[in-house]
Length: 266
Image (cartoon, rainbow, N blue to C red):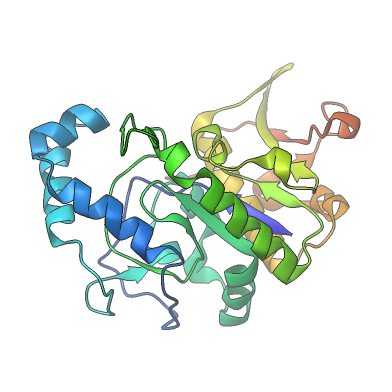
């Protein structure tokens, strides 16, 4: 199995990671090329391009001004401990053992607008660059999708071969998953849906669904999932496989639970 996650906008570069092990970026040169272009953009330009506030634009202008290779223990942090959004609350990487994190290093990949694809322990510096950002990087590569698609897809194929993966667990958002040419990957792609049962209806609630993606990634890591059928045992925080809503012939996997407004604390 190879599991895919999106990155998070919210970052944590203050707390001390529980595991000292690190790895280098897979695509350092490609990331540096983008970062060097972004260094030249004013905060005003970043605000327009990224549709962000003045404060966030200034913050990210400063981030790119300081972005530099090589990454060291002092100026960077492992990716999986740096992302701090809803998905990563579910993953709860700091609670994973070193053995589990080593397993994740081989089986979990984080897609990124700046870094392309990250292993959990790859060092990163703080940034903001969503994959769907409208940015003509070059005349031929007029989006981040065009910049990264073949590169990230080829790397994913290498990782699949390395671990002899039987399927891809796509827990990334549509925005990020689009960077991969799944048609060229000869494996089942499982992209679960997570819904809350409210009365007689099942609803997808964004925060809960995002956290559930992280929970499922954690489940897959802790249980060393190798076959798709093993995912049916996912039962973290009240979820269960809903056979009635699922259709495995169409690769539709749905997990549900009873909705309680206070069941997940932010």
